[in-house]
Length: 185
Image (cartoon, rainbow, N blue to C red; front, side, top):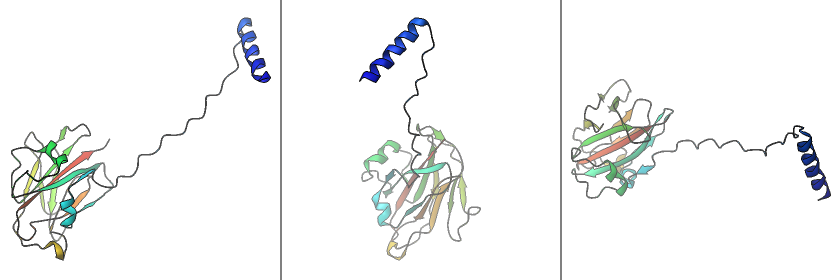
């Protein structure tokens, strides 16, 4: 306590004399934590997992934010998180709808891709969304894929983005798949 009082008195005397006060070292600051590595979509419809659909996390700046599905074009049984993207124009029953947006939800109109066996990023189909909603639409041809035998035949992605593997029409039922990618800065 005595040392503290002496230090305070020396500071007061230095101030009265007009001397510059001695420098005070700021307390150490821990560096900010690096953001955790991207581990997959924030919003995921568990029915996708049941069908064997997976997300391949890739080293790009566009990550799959949300993925869900509709059956027979109905939005009645989609997860609550999907309702924010619901639009009356998205009612197909064997489609893959894809969209890219900023973290603030603004649409990015850029290339969207779909492939089927034999897989390759330079074969398949591409779409450039023209609708103001930003949704790209791929129609999936009918096939009788059985999830118990493995994933469906289609894969979708956007440039510099994660891939969504295993889409199709399970047991010849009419499902549509939805994917929203977010572009990180």
